[in-house]
Picture 1 (spheres, rainbow, N blue to C red):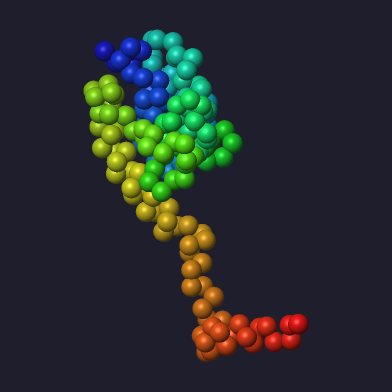
Picture 2 (cartoon, rainbow, N blue to C red; picture 1 turned 120 degrees about the vertical axis):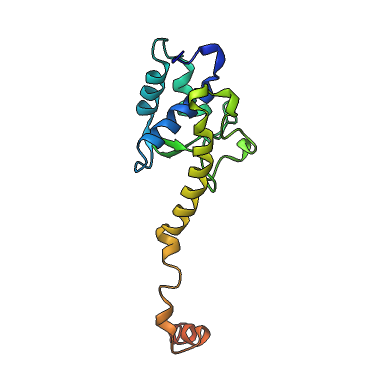
Length: 165
């Protein structure tokens, strides 16, 4: 059977699945709109109507950097207003969501999508490493060292402060 059966997949896992499929299908995209995730979940649901809880899970229940209400899932991150992406290593999250579920168990997904678990485990680590490497603030590290290359930092600071009261 190619449709998700409502009784066999939790809404949170359905949301994670939709977001994971979007990330895998569009690897250059950093995030997706709430509507894009909802539409991908509807596409995956095919013949059954999308459950009403999907939207609220995308907006609130699965979003790691929002206060839990009531769910503590850390499956998505709000990257900007109306945009989400999958949670990955190194993301900040609301402290009350500590220990919250970030990924479904393999057997909680339909068999044809269980490979997404392996894909995600690689993606979340590689993406986190790339984010650190490409961080514009971290890239500035050491960029001003030429300013005091000929003198000790303390001497440089003392010279800058000359004439201060």
